[in-house]
Image (cartoon, rainbow, N blue to C red):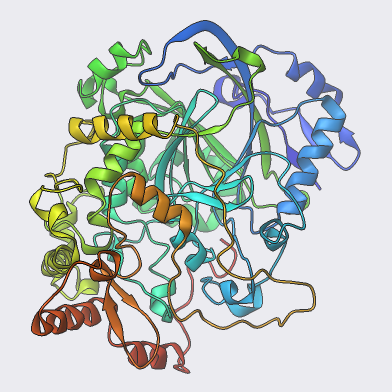
Length: 583
């Protein structure tokens, strides 16, 4: 097994020197010890409202490319590095294709050809047969246990000590602020609400992992800087900021896409330009690639400059208050003789009132991100009407939704009707602004931050629960695989409620509408129930209105439950995956 271990991002970012630190089956070279003695970089990010002592601590971050469920091999590589050099990772970040497969049924929701579906080793950590030796943070890619990830749409523990960042999300760890975006970019579904529902059709399985515009727009609202951003696919045009010749030597089939400007994600490109994180980690292409992107801060504008100044970070203006450069690193998948793992040392400031550098870093909620969720929760399953930001190439999201043939030429209408369906099933307080729920605000511009009222609410909620630390509230929701169990699973019939998501929504005083565009399939002969009514027993609807809502839900879901089941059993072959089963 081989993994490259990098102490600092200096070798190729500056002098283009080859990295000399390698982890091999014979151990770590002597150059690793010398590299480990170099001075690490220092994080410029601090907590939005915390005071700092001036003391710093070193955090060692392990970065993994495509995990493909090979947790045993990844943790073994980290243990080998620790034995050889004494360097222990404080956090492991996995850049997608994590494959949090709990049992054979989860394999049926993974968008890969059946011959590539394997249990691998995550299930052992879910079942309690093994424990993650280092806190692990991951995002989703395009080959995932889709139903499991959707249970934790806003993030949560996929297994003890293994945290899913969500479909988009921001957390803090020991003074670092880490953001991420799950999935890959697909223009045909970018502007659609999330209406894929179990049991998945073959088309659902290839759209549920696609990034949505509102998930990008949430991240664009951030006004405070990020230290690290994680995506699965690469931002568009990032290849022009690194060793393109070397990339094409190993991946010559990318030449046409790169020359035509279609390689990479325009959504991630926009996020990089707006947020300008210090580091960006990715995977997907199964090769190692690094680049340094220099941002034209003056051209971006001064949105967020005041926030950066007030926080004492001095990292310039622009949406997200980021810096002038972003160091990009993509890694391979976990296989022998592949460069799939690297270590990065970062110095971060220690908050006042804590135990300083001796304290154990923990995952914490990000108050700005929770406030953004509180103000945009209704976007997820029902859409927003006309979005205010683009992110999908030259045209905005609304324009592409209206004339994209793949959307039937009615994208904007579908989004508007979807929003109406979701709003119809929410409790009155969430659409009128009264009662305990938040009013639905107008979309805020890039770098504007959340609504001040939402931010104040979140700060109060976190104070009431005793702080921002993410609770260790993992709970099993399905039975785990066991050795000797059946190799072929069954497509799950309906989405399950995860207690972690329910507790987060309860803390934010938001309705649980995530399991069905305000509609949940209960099983049986096409029976459906309104989630809003289920979540709020006091709500009652006239029969005619209930029938209209159910018909609207069936249209959004693509037919009744029996119709969707027949589509799932269709003998027609699914459309081929881009890149086969390799990416």
